[in-house]
Length: 326
Ligand SMILES: Nc1ncnc2c1ncn2[C@@H]1O[C@H](COP(=O)(O)OP(=O)(O)OP(=O)(O)O)[C@@H](O)[C@H]1O
Ligand SMILES: [Mg+2]
Image 1: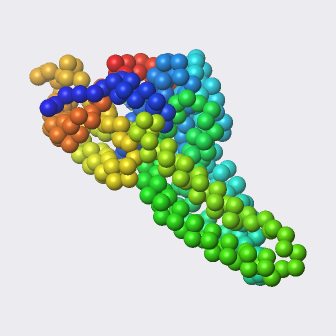
Image 2: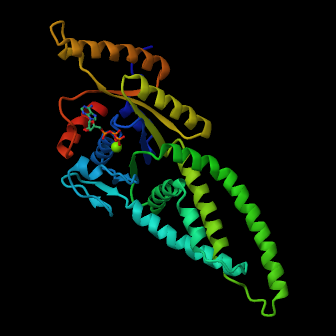
Image 3: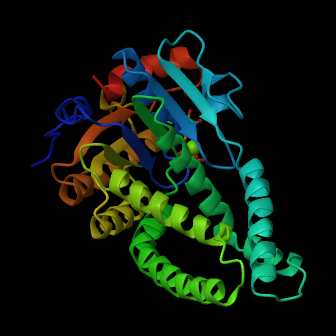
């Protein structure tokens, strides 16, 4: 049946432990706006909330009209709300140094006399390296546990799915690595005269990484704590994109909170005498709305009007709150 069965407000009230909220969807559909509005709503409920972005191309400072780059920053005139654009470049540089140290240590351990540089280069030129850094940033913020609610702008959607999927396989692999390293180590200790325990930074790193991934997986697949919402427009491509995402997420057991339809033209503003362009767009949206009710039956949480202006600044966000959490 066409219609909202469980609104955004009902959903968050029914999930009173909700702590990690994500928005995904095609480019330009309103993910940043939705993250901003949702974070603001939680803050207005008295929950200590952070709106965070791990994307290297940030837009929170633009959305809030305030510089929130590089550190969690209290949002002006909105109690309980912090915003934070995480410096991905910095993390990448730090990770490079860390990796270099580990590779150097390992080469020395294995008594291989090669410069670490070329290994570091090939490890960090990998495009997935940046995505991993973003994911690690997000996880680090979550683990610090300094806020009651975390709203993430631009879910590293494909990445989250891949990394979470991988974490199972990864943990098997790390365990195997650990076993053979333990064996190698005890052999070395057996052969050495001193028999003193050696520090093993590579092993420590592997164990640490495995445990962090497992913990992240537990949090991100907990349907009381986590929800991924998907934003679409009543148009073919954004619908196709979120259908694909939702299927992936179901496969990985990542909780999907529902679908938000943005930029719906308000019918009460349109009549027979309206420009043909407007009437045609309304007809197009009507057709795709039918598809939305069929495809996302029971999971549509809000229909949001197309405003006659962009949404920028906390006042304008605040006005939009009532449309989302009406
Ligand atoms: N309902 C709406 N009415 C009018 N303008 C809107 C509406 N929703 C979003 N916008 C505007 O549309 C633009 C895109 O929104 P937003 O930046 O939130 O999209 P996004 O999905 O985060 O984009 P990107 O994929 O680039 O990160 C912004 O200028 C925003 O102010
Ligand atoms: Mg955005």
